Amino acid sequence: MALPATTKQTRRAKTVRAKRLKTKTTTTKKLRRTVIFIKKKAWKLFIRGGSYTGGAIPIKHRVLGMSSDTPERDTWVKGDSLLDWDGRECDTQTYQFEGVDAEGTPAQWTTNSKNKAYFHPLNTYGDDYWIVDVEMDCSKTENGFFEFKGFMPGNTWEKVLVVVVVVVVVVVVVVVVVVVVVVVVVVMVAVVVVSLLCFIVA
Image 1: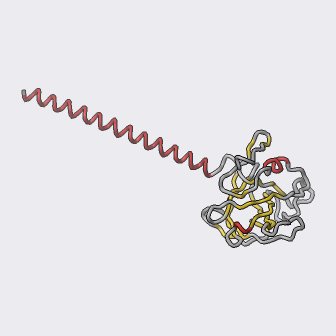
Image 2: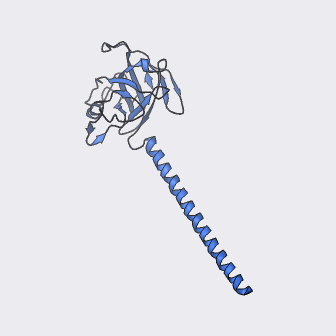
Image 3: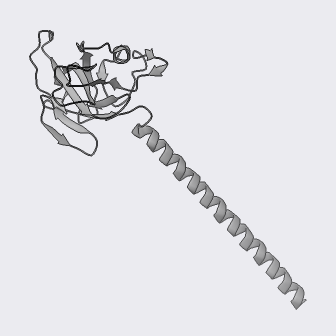
């Protein structure tokens, strides 16, 4: 979910309409503060997204102002200047945290409990709410609407698609091999039968 936003579910992703939040840090007219919350129990979470047409949307990450340090998120946001469907920005988003690459725009785990680590004042919901807090170029959205999808590292839809394609290819190869073997056996049997008939007739 996004704050503030109106949401609707699509087959491809969550679609939200970005509205301006009052902030003293917005200095460019076309940039608007956009906050996304995603409810998910996970150890890491990234988002990818863009406009309806798949176009990238320029973003600028904000300082979260959390009750605890966020070294992972702060490392992965370096060079992340676009909300897009392409994952890590190879030319700029090259920073790793403990050898792990970013796989999109990073989100940060938060809680609404002031007595716990990673409390965020905008989280009024509970534990396991991941936040993305950026200044977004809303002129690149579709009348204020954009799409996004959250995912965990190692569970991306691209990897699932690759596995499915590999399985299909293997099945097709096996079927082709079986068909070829059956055809060869049938031909050999036919040759033997014809030879026997010719021998008997002779």
